[in-house]
Length: 227
Image (cartoon, rainbow, N blue to C red; front, top):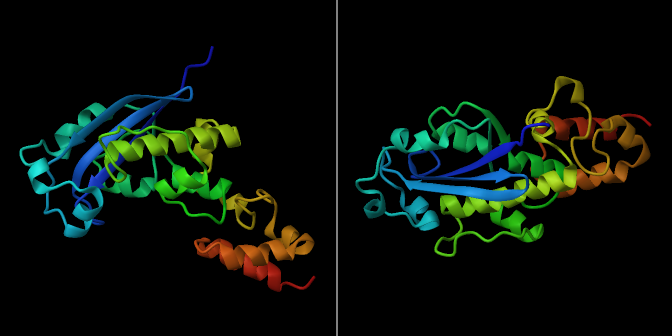
């Protein structure tokens, strides 16, 4: 009997884009259920910017006397799988978290091309069924954890991917260069798609604004090649 996989969905709120954590939170996803909510306000190592305060509404008074993130993070550590929306940011601002990391933003881009990928935008467009804590609001860490957890559950339901399959999609493999990573032609060579449905590639270039430069260049080259 295989062991049950536990995903720890984690989120941070910060003093600004350069870091300085003011809040950390997590929930666990186990067999499609959201369990074990945790959250902590944290004394940051720098002032909270007005722009950040306007988004998460965490004030200096709320974090006064709170422990530093190095103390608060201890109870969040020890998971085999961590999940975050735009995981590269949370990994950068958090202390070292040993374990495998999955990014729901990257996975969502592969499954649903051409839409908006913010947490709340995905919640609305995918009609995610989730009930965050009533006393919180979007851009508080625990609230966002619930939304990300619901997104992770939907990703696994739609794709059938397990933890290992999702991990394999975090970074493109060299062997996958020149292959479409998402959409109805996912996994097919771009050159082949250019032959049989060039209109689809033209649609991608026109409508998907966040195509990676390497992918955009490959699509344009395939369309320009003689047919």
